[in-house]
Image (cartoon, rainbow, N blue to C red):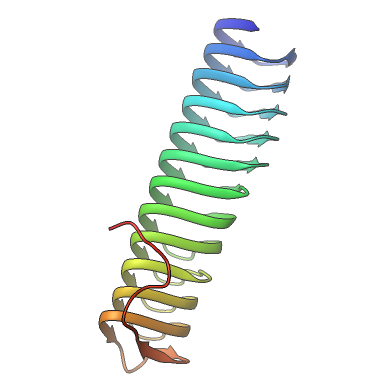
Length: 213
């Protein structure tokens, strides 16, 4: 295993993993053939890691591509990140673009684009004109004006105006005007604006998926 204390990269560098580091500040190009583990990773350039990655804090304003899975406490992306396997994070903030096989986080704040087969979180905040591609399973979710999502399974859902949604299954839901929703299935209460376009509304006895609450 290669061990690194503190490294700033302005040019091009390649390592053969596994690599363990305290801090890497990347403004150039970094390629790690294998796994990596560390405390802090900041990328304003281009990073590529072929294996699994476990880092406490990651900030990406450039581009990051990981072939394996990623586990971190805090992840902030204003650039682009592509995770070949699953992503597990505490707080996840995305103002750029992220793609992963599956995403699991405590809290997600999105003001960009997100794509995964399944997205799981306690709380999800989707900002204006942001998009999520994939099935969402969460405790609470707010979908901002002009936001786009596919199917959602949640405890509590708030949908602001001009949104585009697939099927929503939840305990409680509030829908503002001009939203376009394929179907709503709710357990407790549904407050829907008369100016919203909802294909079908059904009251159900219980949710078909377990959700955080």
